Length: 388
Image (cartoon, rainbow, N blue to C red; front, top):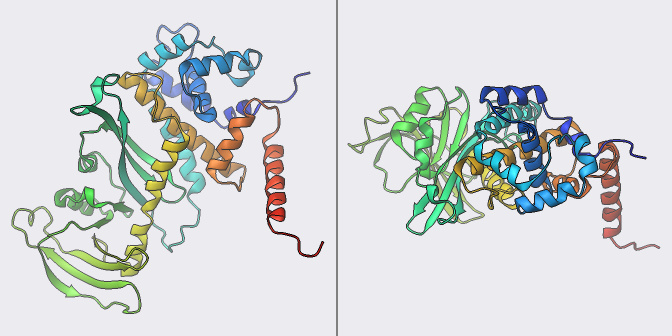
């Protein structure tokens, strides 16, 4: 007798379905659609992300083998690789981009009160980009170099919870600095940037928007010291100065004073120079905030390893963007579920558990309790029993 709900059906309960329908209606996603809805498409692609499917044929075979359970999993249309391929090819990718933003808004509220280690009330963001390599013969629209294709994933993450708040998918040729032109700064927030974003005019725009930036300095910058601040010589801070830009061709791009902090990283035996427009935080805190930027590198590494954004189920630009946005939606959705259910395991472990229990009819609470019990037993037996 079939009782209870599958894990996949329980995951659906965390989806804001009304908001999804609004996104579909906004871009006329159901125009001339008879059977395979946008929700069917989203669920099939989400299933592929959660269970690490490799191709459309793989998705079709797995879902058809569970035909009797599909209706209760929310998939109403008939699953076929041709239908799914057409949906990825033709349905506007912005439907899933907008829905990802809905999930991001929910996740940010859930993680907003998480501890940040650094005593700071303001929101701290990290901005960076990663290139996803593509085959030039299959993706000619994404030509990057003479014999190479690629797209670039520009991402701004909230360092409380590592939740992406802004994502822009562009051709790989687009320079990282150009993203600062479309980014809407949030007054009072901190933006941690790598040296690839060093551009005086764009940094000055952040400053005029009442936002703070912390960025690695380029070599050979022409500056003049105005004032040297006191530093704690026992710390790794080597210098804390107020300076002005003296290079004639950029002096007008950033006409105000800027702060220069020199920090020596004992672990890497490396001297680091930071520029910031914040003059209130201690110099050591500036360096500690920049160190937090590593979270975005981990985010890129995680999604490339554990989500399907390196091999694609379609070759058009629309299909590629659809797959990436649904992958981001799945990442954020799992983060929401993890937070709401107070799951102690990390995101990767939780995703692995879901991948092998997706068709099981077991309550989430019971699944999590069983996992905790197993981990406790493993921890207890990891240490040899001396008195037995």
